[in-house]
Image (cartoon, rainbow, N blue to C red; front, side):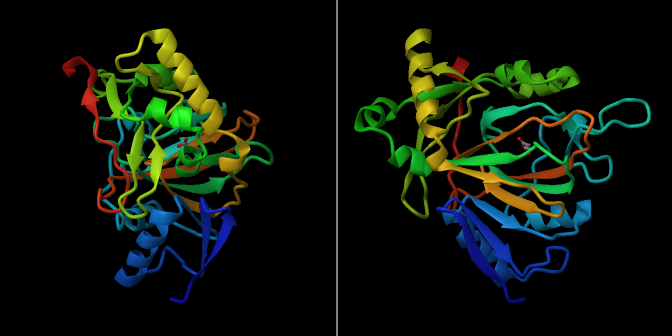
Length: 294
Ligand code: SIN
């Protein structure tokens, strides 16, 4: 299947044109996509028409699929697929998660000891305005840090806590099962990583879960994090994606964060998402430690 690529914005996002992901994709193409993905953390495939099985099966070519702790957002048909939507069923129960509000800069799974850092999001229904998603390139952000901040973050580990993210959610999304609580204790991840393919250093951040820095008092840790987030989310490091129905985006949470803008609650938005464990040979995959164990 012939295909080509177009850079969408600096180097962070790259559009892949010519692949129909509902058709079999050969191993060679998957290898080429893997190599492309190592360099461009956001790959955009437009004009797709995917069933849940097709979305999950294509995603699984990049790593085994994770069933995320939000089992309440899982598709009843294919549980590895998460439903991201503000829609409700006939009884007024949300059919998925994340509603219509703003979602601040975050990295999926940062609160897990072994984060599954690959993600794919597929757009089925979109609001006329808002609901735009942006990604920030944390390699470029690292490289742009003043030397003073590079020195300050070197060797640091941040504390990532899912309880902070939950507090920022709307309504029922704030409630998780006892099992999900047990799986998400506060953990530590290094703030700086090196990409195994490109050799570039990158920050690892999530403004919705970091609550401090190991070994620093609360005020100094928060002040340093604040400064890093302010620097990292400057427009020069950001790709803003204007969704079209049929877009499927693959991204690497190992060296990006993303945020979603809010949209009109009376509009309809329906997205489906998969989450993959990526290989350490090709991707930044942070390895966490329990806060309590240190
Ligand atoms: C997410 O943060 O994973 C969802 C992003 C979106 O709804 O655009």
